[in-house]
Image (tube, rainbow, N blue to C red; front, side, top):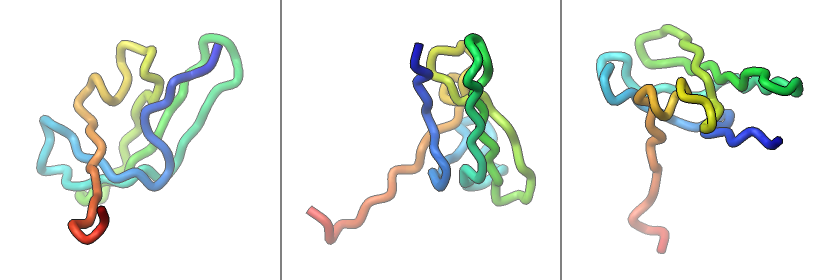
Length: 79
């Protein structure tokens, strides 16, 4: 069974409920190769604190369901 991950290293994110954390960047990704193992990401936020979250979209406690959202970066000059 393949794990459906949400974030990868270098992604920039924010939390819907904790705006005072600031923008965060994924600095580490860990994936278990064992059945039922966890898939985790570590995010460094602008407030200087690293926080860890579950990164498997099939898990009910995935960081997406907990309020972590990707920041879509785009340029108006790119079409």
